[in-house]
Amino acid sequence: MPAPVEKNDFIRQIVRDDLASGKHAAPRTRFPPEPNGYLHIGHAKAICLDFGIAQEFAGSCNLRFDDTNPAREDPEYVAAIQDDVHWLGFEWHDLRHASDYFEVFYLAAEKLIRQGDAFVCDLTAEQVREYRGSLTEPGRNSPYRDRSVDENLDLFRRMRAGEFADGARTLRARIDMASGNMNLRDPALYRIKHVSHQNTGDAWPIYPMYDFAHSLSDAAEGITHSLCTLEFEDHRPLYDWCVDKVDLAHSPELLVSLTAKGMPFEASKPRQIEFSRLNINYTVMSKRKLMTLVNEGLVNGWDDPRMPSLQGIRRRGYTPSSLRLFADRVGISKQNSLTDFSILENCLREDLDAHASRRMAVLDPIKLVLTNLPDVHEETLRFANHPKDETLGARDIPFSRELWIEREDFAEVPPKGWKRLVSGGDVRLRGAGIVRCDEVIKDAAGDIVELRGTLDPESRPGMAGADRKVKGTIHWVSAKHAIKAEVRLYDRLFDVPDPDDEADGKTYRDHLNPNSCTVAQGYVEPAAALAQPEQCFQFERLGYFVADRRDHRVDAPVFNRSVTLRDTWATKA
Image 1 (cartoon, rainbow, N blue to C red):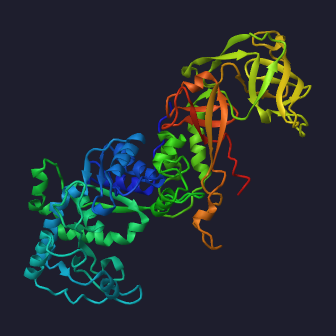
Image 2: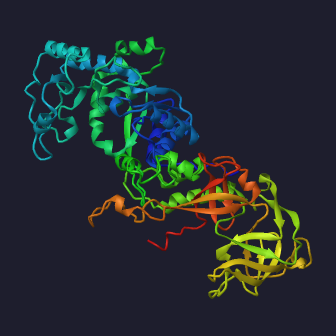
Image 3: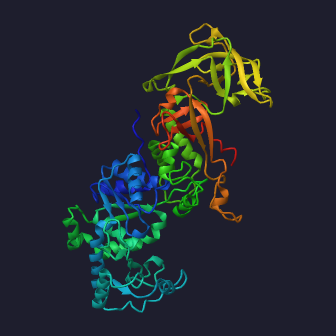
């Protein structure tokens, strides 16, 4: 097996330099999702980066839930996120929650007040926006900015005690209302929310803002490299301000609450590093838009195989290794770019081509009767599970007088270059011999209902004529032994590369692909029906399919098409 290729993106180079200089003994990273929805494929890139760097450099990575906004969060999402991380093949060092640090955040806020770095503000949200100024005009100081330390401490403690209504007051950082960075214009650190929290119950009527909580969580956990997407680049000065002003590394008294909980900590000054987020054409990544698709019934839930959610693409048949390959192929950079959907599909094809067992299935069946075989004829043929991997073994496929073949594999009037079955012509039945079509049976409406032919006995496996040349080979299943199956033919959810483009007055809803899911009632060989949920196959000549993780049963098989054998969209672009 070849040695793994060393990854050389700019973040990994920073880590290498930090380790070489002795700044850190090992990297500590974290993946910090907010549990307010399901993860999507963009998060997979971040997961592979955060956990991947920890693995590659013998470090550690925490899974930390940013649960500072309880009104929007749900334990269902917490469970799904943990499932997604495990499914992708990663294990976290510690499972943490921002709520683990609520006492730390509160004591840190009091410290900022005592230092003169924070104040309690009575402006409404609308007034705060008015005072903030614009990109070209500086903001104005709040009339409450110069309250005394004692008054601020008193008001903040009363906020903590629950004396004030939602939105009545905020705790704001005192930085610079004339800063060219809007995030530094006295941003809010705490807001009042009388909302029950899934972990802390009704203990807290105030909750920290994301920038404050995120930076101090990183510092408390000893995170060395805080990796995030480019939209947080403008937030980095505030991140550093919070870390520096609170200075947890030299304020052990603020971390006493963690010791009481038995939670190890090693406070540090983390470094935030930004990278470009994943953007893929023919899809939308906005959580709000994905939520709309679900709530309006435009898809069948978050795990609909057309959705870019990790739950959805997992049900579609995408494998963890294909997504890790995709993350490697897309790479890490500082430049925003648009990734073509075909790259994602090709990563899955590459993985399944190497690892998926082969099976035979017929999705649009027409019966082929081999008239020179007895009515009771039955035999068993041995087929390798994979043409290039003997370790995957072999299976038995029953063969009989009556077969199902694909309707599209027969042409009464063949087009130029046709290499499949025609009336009076020969074609090879995969692994069984050569058949000639002798008769075409039609119904009263003129539709073909049955084909009749003869199987050349000298072309059977092991016979002298087995190597006789014919133009084409088609697949089949025994009509007597085949298992009926529902096969869901999934395709891209949107039919234009940029469904977010509203230049023509349309929205992403108007660009839903009407052919993104069609259902076929077909037949599969018996070995396919025995599949376990989430087991992937190549249905020969048809594409890659997976046994549906929710609906598949041995007695009622359900398969989802993961991806076609070739890119069928290249000619549509």
